[in-house]
Image (cartoon, rainbow, N blue to C red):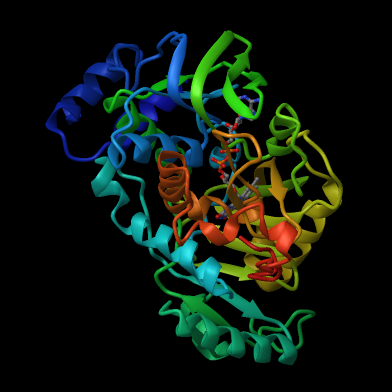
Length: 430
Ligand SMILES: Cc1cc2nc3c(=O)[nH]c(=O)nc-3n(C[C@H](O)[C@H](O)[C@H](O)COP(=O)(O)OP(=O)(O)OC[C@H]3O[C@@H](n4cnc5c(N)ncnc54)[C@H](O)[C@@H]3O)c2cc1C
């Protein structure tokens, strides 16, 4: 955590107490005197609301519960360290160009919150609206893309089709030779989309929530959900029992495990999703490019690493690592589309576990247990939703009713059949 705290301090915007002198002073003291960004309190015996899971979604939920709804007696309970789950493992693609109205509602709500997030949290989350381009590799894909762009624009979301020549101009390192295995036939771009610094999002929400009195309790695993009749009464943890009037569960990757503690069976599949980065190089690509047909996407980090992501591995697992064939096919596609990649070394690879619903849309919902709420199923694409998800989930917990944006994502849709099928929202679905 020490390293994280240092990076975090450097990221903070504005205040002069974080001056260059403080930086130098702390560097000379082996980085040991940084002021803590949030407290490490002992759990209280009881809270009004407990949020299980200290990823971006959980921390954002706690922040909005405190800042928008005035709830003050809140704990976020995290089994490891905050942001150590998918929040700190994702490739940070942010966009709102989904197909269905319901998805457009939640992801555009999130995108608007991203646009003001650094100011709201007084924390530089390095949100960079560099555009997200999705490629078409066949005539059929291109036609489908044109239809999709019209649908997206009907929801007031920016989206435009691009020709191969325009793509080559935007992304000079791409091979637009029509003879390659997956030729670039065109694409569509959301220019307001982009990337952000994932750790900073967790840290920014954590600091802002802590400032409002939220207790962030790390290294505390939830092992049971306590109920009295049909009502939640608290949680059992590795650090003892904590009572609560309401419990919100935001444990991406382990939602099914935590749900089973309350006797619930969620329509969720948990699978590994992998990403990797190259050694750092000079800036060569200043947008995000996704390729659905080959399950590969690319961007460049501020450090200069090329960031690559794959599609999900095809088996269920909780191991936070994926298989080599997935990485192999991702790199084969990358080398063909971006020939310079063949000269780079892979610096590191990693995986996370993503929870996916049958319709590739999330669950933001009350449950049959009174006072117990679930926010999960964001699959391969929940980072972009972080602020919107936290905002509407806080609203659901505070009012015990979903608002218009959250309502379509209730568990009820698996009974009514009113599914929101976003498979192929981008193929690789980030
Ligand atoms: C390789 C990869 C690439 C991705 N790329 C993108 C992308 O480009 N764009 C995008 O939008 N999304 C992407 N995603 C998906 C995105 O990361 C997730 O949807 C999102 O981060 C989920 O956030 P969260 O806060 O719900 O989950 P997490 O950050 O995983 O937080 C959940 C937390 O719950 C904790 N927890 C679990 N069980 C317990 C327990 N029993 N007790 C206490 N705590 C518990 C975990 O330790 C974890 O910290 C990617 C995911 C991966 C793995």
